[in-house]
Length: 494
Image 1 (cartoon, rainbow, N blue to C red):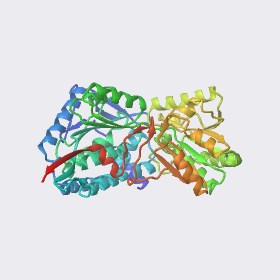
Image 2: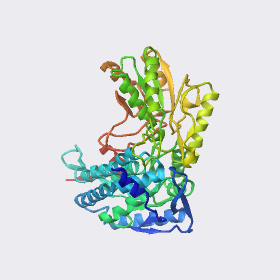
Image 3: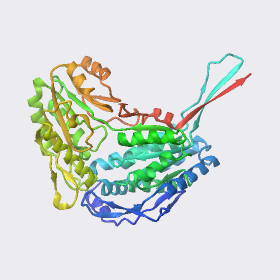
Image 4: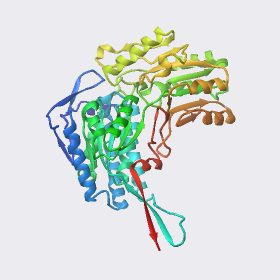
């Protein structure tokens, strides 16, 4: 992308946007709307429909109707593949527009957003499109007088609830395999970042997806999200977000039709630097970017940095030098390294964590303040604390902002104990020159993803998900298809 292209796109007015149900944009049943406030400058961008239970019901009815008709659920894999490949092409064609639209909505720096949102989503859709005609059922090893066939069938109507940090990327992780398997989908995006998923649904219709197969209902999580969780005709919920909401979704399943619920609930990921790390400068650079890009609003962010004592001072000098050079600025400026915090509410939560860390005795080495306040937007300086203990709030709870806590350790055993000392288990990283240490740490750390001598970068070919209270049910890879299909046995006497 070029800066002049970004500037042209950012100047485009955004008309009020309705719900997307059965292939059409519609107002909410109540007629109410929600203001969309851009974190770039704190100003109103547009409005989205304020969906509620009646709107969720309309979308589920549309999704169920088209599912039962078989126009998508019983379409040949080759046909589903063709439509999804066309959708991927359309997303790629409109990538610049989608990236700028998303940044205006949630504040992610454009350099990251362009790759992580539309281009990543296009790649994900293409991956699952290609999988549609390559995933087989099974023939069981039955006695010779019986033929046992194991079929995979779509579940039905899938509810997808997506957070505001990477709505297209995370949305595609759930929507694409659900569609590839033949399901119908109802998406409830975050009210903080709904615009790109509404556009994605329109592009899906353009690609030839039958009306009602992909629906998007915007609105408040406590209203529209609850209605989706409680709906008696939704077969499964795929959710990324907070632990509190995840628990409520499990309760809604128990109170309704025992729908399946798949949860990805964030983390407090340890980033462990041993004294024999191959390149401390590189480790510091990657660690800073792994924490502060997108203002720390990344579920796998390495928010707990564990550094071995012999290199602690030298590594911290490198880390602080890199952190100090990060440019926090307008997220639609290609020169900005870090963009805006998503909302005034989230900025307030971040600053409360800073105040609590200082109250509990942590030492602030960098940041900790709101900056660029004159713009009206929500910006925060990358923040580093040391002298963190496992009892502190900053060591235990997910901030989801640019606030890093640093701990010192002496032995490998101590590093493992610190790494596993939270209720979370989403991601981790280990920096070492020892293959043996790396393998031992991968086995010992309770996390769904363990990076070695890097942080982040896993692609669509491998699963992403957590242990413990980081949730269950994996996004990405062929394993994700298991969430959206059911197994049916045919037992045939010969």
